[in-house]
Image 1 (tube, each protein chain N blue to C red):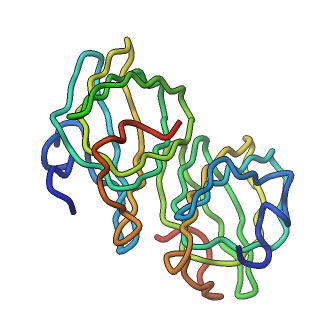
Image 2 (cartoon, each protein chain N blue to C red):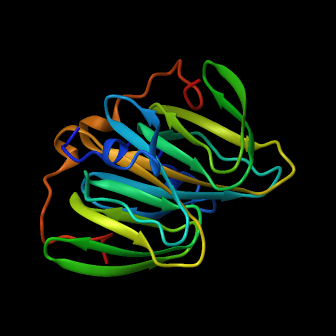
Length: 114
Length: 114
């Protein structure tokens, strides 16, 4: 796994719920106002189980992202930190791809694909 | 995509909601009593958005599968047909892996990993 694995950097928020040689699946949970420190995501599919209102920051800038519950988005490999800027708890699933499919972090990419 | 792609064989139930060179994501919906005809899944991650009570059949036999909402399971590459044997509608997301990660169908495998 990459450096700054969120399970290591932010264990209060991220936990592994499934893993094999092809994928690792993380569950993310937080409460309004909570933040994460910088961490790396490989190429992943995000599935929101709740509404999601979030400020993402990276070396190149910041971006606010708002998603509804039960949305599915592509998250290209990236490094960021996040803050729950909404009024509700977040519950989101990340299906991380492994091996070549994990991709390389692009410092200009921030948040899910638009 | 493999023969017996569920989007082709069962278009009333399966639809593509996201696709790129690494993954294809399907949304599955049905009502109690509805069935699907035989179709093929590559290696996939399933995320249930509702409870899920289902009878799966393949050439080698049948298996009843019950899952709760918001569960995440690994579905090894397989060919099956399904029936909603519960009392509630089903809403499930399948994150299908592509390329070598899609795997080969094993006729003895039925349903999610236990």
